[in-house]
Image (tube, rainbow, N blue to C red; front, side):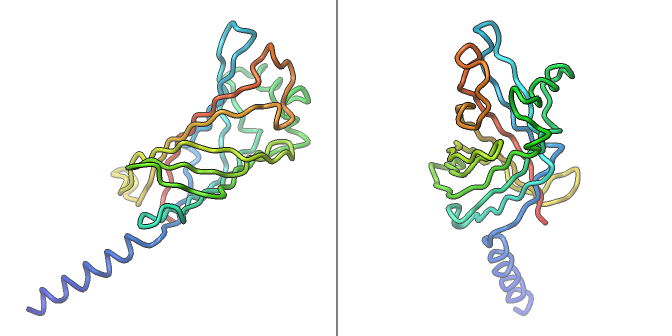
Length: 189
């Protein structure tokens, strides 16, 4: 009887801990912010905005109370071509020497279905802050078998207008609309 009471007490405490909001550090090695645009109608190149740090607070019981904040240093921007990386970081586009970091901070989360969320927030590039809306899928939540840490993973998509952020050179020949596809893994602090 004592063992049964102890087991019930431990399971109820464990249930409370699982339901509480959990803070996760985003893993820069498993996070990509891929941007894709049209170049004069000929191609649809991509670039990856790496992250140096980011935090996800996920409330499994009340996902609307969740949040995310991430910084993307432009020195990590990679188009997979050194020459094009330099061009993107130049005054023609991001002016990375003057504005070294892009930021995203959520302002709201809505549940849109099983494992589906809508995350709204503010994206800041070159000191221009505009609201964006992300369509988010919760991929998985659990213990990673490699590092044995409690983890969570999401994918998200959105489309922005780069001219809204002061990065409008060559519009409309190079598309103003940029598709963003984000994937991230994060681990409990």
